[in-house]
Length: 133
Image 1 (tube, rainbow, N blue to C red):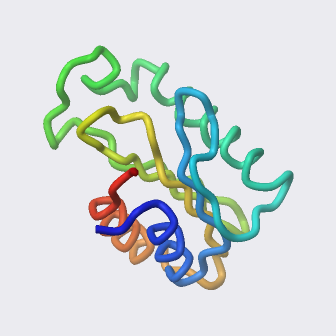
Image 2 (image 1 turned 45 degrees about the vertical axis):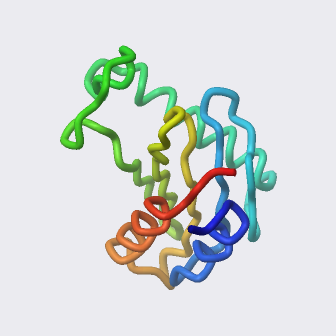
């Protein structure tokens, strides 16, 4: 099973990928990063993505059982958040680990060179194989 560095390199092989981060959303800190990031680099991207995750988790319309410390079954567990802009996609894929669920993969894609549906499938496969070391 791949570790952090190999997983990030594999994320960069997804068509249209420009940058990939693994982020701890409790702190907003970057655990691993690769690629180019606009508007302030990988730390700024991680901080912004963390704010999106926190806003969604704090909104009662989006809250699942994991927010209240309960075990989320497969139907209720969050998978990802997709942000779209004129020239880019940002995919935030949650990593469901045995020890806790506070990490996500952030993939920045060039919209003109990527296929959002395929990128989601590839990122899901990559996240399922990832072992945080």
